[in-house]
Amino acid sequence: HPLDVYTNLEQHLDEDTVLVMDGGDYVQWGRSFLKARKPGRFQRLGPLSHLGAAVPYAMAAKLAYPESKVVAFSGDGAFGFYSMEYDTAIRHNINITTVLGNDHTWGIDKTFQVAYYNRAVGTDLRPIRYDKVVEAIGAYTEHVDKPADVGPAVGRALNSGRPALVDVAIRSGASPLADAMIARRTGE
Image (cartoon, rainbow, N blue to C red; front, top):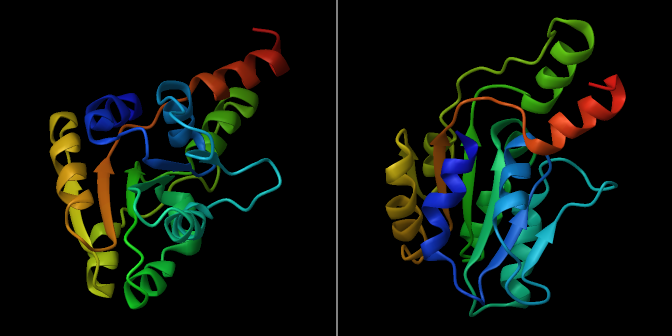
């Protein structure tokens, strides 16, 4: 479950850690669970931002707070937009860590389509191992299948001294935000 990702990694975050939340449904669980620790240390893409921009936002945060850990959270669909920015992070030694929730789907779109139209069209993604993609660029990566392994993997990524990505296999499911939006529209 996406919430397992956030509950199992929190011990690796301190008050100076900068959290960057992408758009998409997987990230809404983190927005609901993780707390802002200090001003400027909890950033989310606003409603007018581009989906997938968490990686470049995280790079900017690392430049602004070079002594802090910077952790970006993105779903697999969103991550595809800016995944090659890891090349920039590696070339310029901008050590960020992305925790990727990978369910091979445009989650929020699928949730809305099924809720509103009783079917989903064009929402399934190919099962891409983004840890392998980013590893080929030169980053530290891990793939995680079990919730209990998330925390240790994130800890190793943060301590790797390199740009890093932890690709976490998650189960698709509507976030509290998606459920609330559906209820508001349908009256259920």
